[in-house]
Length: 168
Image 1: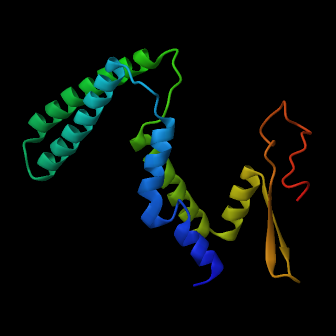
Image 2: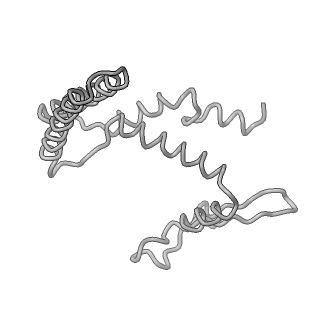
Image 3: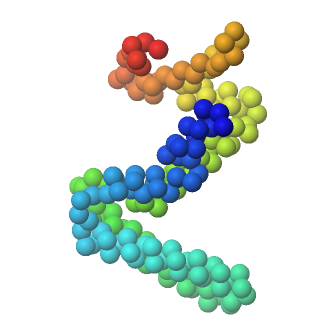
């Protein structure tokens, strides 16, 4: 096993460690105490998500579409009320991502990386340009230098010098 494979297999984002990493991120992001209203709203939202999946399965199994549509509408309305309660309960407080939100975000980034790897050269170049990434190939060393301009989208930060390890 090469050194880079060894690092990847022990990295927090390696496939077999991803759930543990997400759990750690969620624990670090979790507020010390969640109010009863917030906890209740989150429970209702999770319950509604479960019911919506059940309703969809019933529809796919051949249940009466009119009845299932009514169930879905009622469940979505209940979920929307719970989301509004959650937003109202969180007003003024620092909003934090739930474990499921963190997991979706992390997995979407992983999916995005796969899309970029499979993209055409012109598409990759445009993605890198929009992210402020510049790649320079050193043919003598057979290495690519990757640079990213961290201040490209900030008007206040124009001209701000960003240095890593003294100018790398």
